[in-house]
Image (cartoon, rainbow, N blue to C red):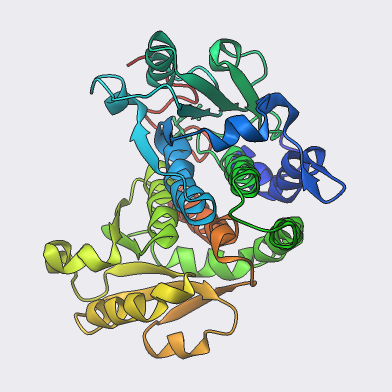
Length: 364
Ligand code: F6R
């Protein structure tokens, strides 16, 4: 049951610190990452040529984030595909490739079909799955479970957070096995990961502030989410969280792409949510914020603690605690989940069961 929370979604958002801890801790032993279920030796990890991450919806968004992490840390090329596209595009797969299928339910029809496509070409497959014994868990060569427990709300929150953690662990493990990072760097990354649960807790405690802000946007027509790199991936998930439960139209844009079309949609008062957690891209995103602000947009920014100069380019700022640049999604998504949730609540929508959607999409 809802354990005193008004909705399952709220309960599940609050379970995220525990979910992150549960997905992390069984896989850290004596300061090292052990993913027994992966069943791969360091030699086999070194032989991986390319990774294909295939998923739908929010699970796909975690894959978009993971591409930056795998490529940045381990220098392994990664392709991320929507399962509904991958299965029909006659993908080029090589015997040294690894196909990772990500799914909370383990029953998503397109993701399952993508898995079968990879298996039919005899390519190694790994499922990152939440529901134990589900179809994808049974059929993938190897399974890494996300220990999020049952997720009831249609809009995913805690399973999303767990999927990110599982992929961070894989990326660190792969980077170490391939000699791309030192033992000390592994230790530092793990130290940052272990801090995430408390940091998420802190961000969740902002709920009243975000609820007040969200109430101003229950009549919004369009909302735009912008960011670069991992911040773009966060934007995609923030946008989906808002639209799927509140029916407010929203879109995510790579910030640098705005002036190639979308900027013409900005009117007086249009809400633009800018995510700026990547320090090397920070100045570029801030200049995009200025561009939309001068055209009348109301800018809400999500950035790292300490970046107070952002207040010149934003009307409303949410600061996230400091973490490694690869892990910021795990923190920045929390206020965006809360924002989507409270717009939906403010509009009186059926938060846990939005219209036209099902928790597990078993049709194509
Ligand atoms: C959005 C959401 C969906 C799912 C997608 C994949 O909040 O929940 O976009 O992420 O339908 O579902 P799974 O992970 O079960 O394959």
